[in-house]
Amino acid sequence: MTKDELILAHKTYLFPAIFHYFEQPLVLDHAQDQFVYDADGQQYLDFFGGIVTVSVGHGNPNVQQAVQTQMEKLVHVSSCFATEPMVALAQKLAQISPIPAAGGKPAKTYFTNSGTEADETAVLAARLYTGSTEIIALRHGYHGRSALAMGLTGHAAWRLGPPTQPGIVHAHNAYCYRCPFGLSYPECGVRCATDVEELIKTSTSGKVAAVLAEPIQGVGGFITPPPEYFKIVAEIVRRHGGLFISDEVQTAWGRTGGKWFGIEQWGVAPDLITSAKGLANGFPIGVTIARADVADALKGLTISTFGGGPVATAAGNAVLEFIEEKNLRANTESVGAYLKAGLEGLQAKHNWIGEVRGMGLLLGVELVRDRKTKEPAPKETNALLARCRDQRILVGKGGLYGNVIRISPPMNISRDDVDEFLRRFDRALAAVSS
Image 1 (cartoon, rainbow, N blue to C red):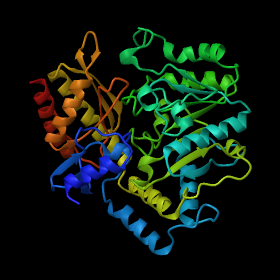
Image 2: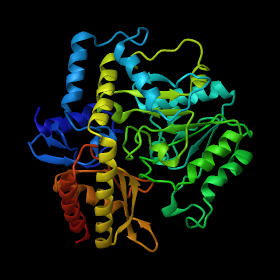
Image 3: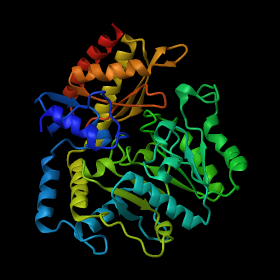
Image 4: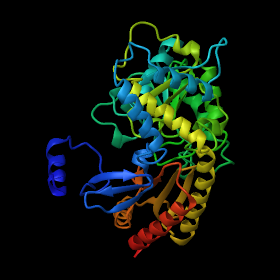
């Protein structure tokens, strides 16, 4: 098919709810390392990574070789059978996760195909373990596209149909730039966190199953809480009988820099971790890692037909090995700090950049029409995305108001890549400003 035929067929045969950043979809053909190429052969510098999924570069040879080798041996048998890649990955996850051992038993993993399924599994396990059904999620959070996941999501644009689910309440997130209480950190005393106590006492039975939270909210616009936030929230929830579930679909595997998991940046040991995306560098995978006694509460018969498949788990093992071998957690920390400093330099130059936030290579740029009023600039953000396309760079968009540029390149990029990105991003900003 030609490019125009592909675009027409896409519009004709796919659900219209599929999300696009551009009025005219960008047709991509192939990719390598930090670059993707469209149907016309034009090269783009990819600073979005397939929505925080291409963690170690497009077409990474180590991952591709591991997948090819596994495909020549065994592609699928379902999770009814044990395979070496699945067991090896589960063992590795237990070794690197911050979840504490329970009764001398290491953390256990349930494999699925996506972050949505991982969150569903975590909520089910928490409810069975605690005997309670009530779940606390965060406003502005995103947890997937199933009915339950949409009910957990605190973002109207992503709650399709009637997504209300019984037993779910939403706490204030730590959106310091737009504090829901009109306060300023740190004088606020982290009111958004302490308010969880009031939420439990007024909007639940007083006994909850869990809080489910992203360390850095992805779709929400890479909202990054202050250091005290999660410790306070975890203590309150545990005091009321609940568990702490860290949704690491976007923040795991060194993405925030230095640590394997984002929640480690806040010094909290969760009871369960969910993740997906970057673990397999583009192959479909989801994981729910749980404290052993919590995992053991999920009794009875259950199966994920494709979860833990040998090809996806072989990719996952190769990704983790590559991150360790190339010390990408350190690279993400240093190159991420360099990129953030560069974005802050652009903030000083372009007065419609309201805030630069995030950690590692998970950075958000919130755009406003006026820095004093903080009026969101969604139309200008859409225009900026188009100008970024003109400059041959790919970035994402998020935020409740659609005014946050999301930046999440592969974790093995260099400072030279950052310099080139900043030059092009500056030109795109200038084009919209003019």
